Amino acid sequence: MDKRPETMERITTRALADKFIEEQLAEIKAQVGDKKVLLALSGGVDSSVVAALLIKAIGDNLVCVHVNHGLLRKGEPEMVVKVFKEELGANLIYVDAVDRFLDKLAGVDDPETKRKIIGKEFIDVFAEEAAKLEGIEFLGQGTIYPDILESDGVKAHHNVGGLPEDLQFELVEPVKFLYKDEVRVVGSALGLPDSMVYRQPFPGPGLGVRCVGAITRDRLEAVREADAIVREEIGKLEPTPWQYFCAIPDFQSTGIKDGKRYMGWAVVIRAINTVDAVTAESVEIPWEMLKRMRDRIIETVPGVNRVFWDISDKPVSTIEFE
Ligand code: XMP
Image (cartoon, protein in one colour):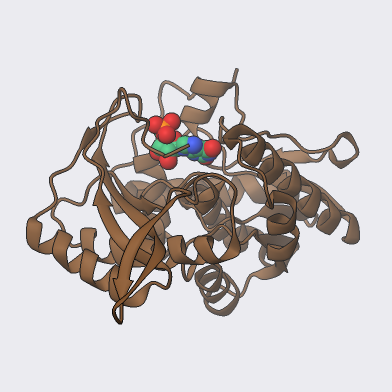
């Protein structure tokens, strides 16, 4: 197992981040030379920081692939393109794989099967893109130190991981000895926006595990719209909770509109605090904020006629709904 050097200082300030960045740029250049590096850029903190470092170190020789699987939050794919392609000038391939993922997921209601399909499809799409490119010898990865400590260096322990045998590249992992808070300090020093650097954790299968049961396109859109409202409102709390989002279970209940009864979905709001995601406590949300979210969701999200607030702690309830 790779071990963080004992002499390595914790990166807590801008000056220490700048020093780390200088060292990493030199190391990346020494490792990669004028060869090409491929990176799956999800828009998460870790891959974003690695992308920003690699762009600085090797410019166009970094090829980023952003796979839109349709399960990202509102505005996320656009944000990745804006920040990396337009602002940082990255060599970015945007892959619209929405139909492909949603077709594969249609009718699948078992959570672990959903996760497996998403993980496998992601690897397939990425491998297909990689196969179209020539002269790639390295693979950039946003491995961070907890990944090494907790799961033998495999990123996102929940997801099926690993690239196919014929796609074995040498790894470039510039933040592999950093803890999350250090990655964020480095990301800020690299000029990434706060909304990217200080964002809350988001599961690999994305909104797929919050559109509970078999995913349908209309319910998934409803989760995405409601989630944007929940994030905007609860994001105003100080301090902001560790994780806050919503889910839409696969059931409908009665509503009434224009004097007629109809069936609609229920949005469940969840906000939790935790240290390590092993246990978690439901966060108190002010009544005025709850009512504002309720009104905005009911008024603007098609198909929703009810709003719940989940006050369960972990254990026994997990943070996500499936
Ligand atoms: P649970 O629901 O197990 O979640 O209490 C604990 C933390 O893990 C995140 N989570 C995931 N992350 N892939 C991920 O990358 C997944 O399949 C997954 N499922 C849960 C969850 O958001 C929480 O922060």
